Image (cartoon, rainbow, N blue to C red; front, side):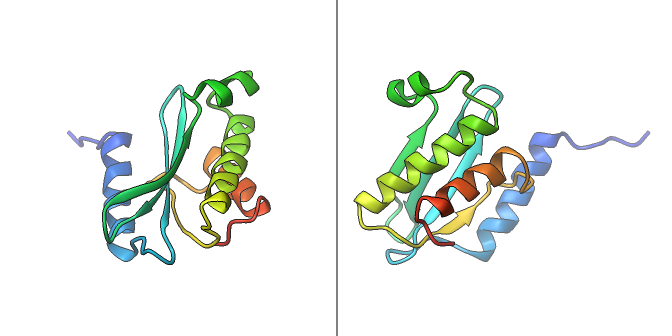
Length: 122
């Protein structure tokens, strides 16, 4: 009998492969994205010191108040603009995009496009 690996294990393997290829530095930190069944999370991380510089998620009250649902394409787009604005306030304009092993379509792509439109470069 052939056992198929779970989607979660496959995603984690992809994420490890991606993380071996790049990491965030002080001049170009990493924009890491995670989505669960109910929420989305985005962080800008400097991997050289292991610190989160900026973060945003759909769990925050002010973000949640603007959204009808917290895990759809509209929520991802809004979260992308929020993370980009917060990054610009901290003086971060260029990042490396870490899609977290998720396929680059739908919510993950919407977040990236919104962040680019709001001024982040990657």
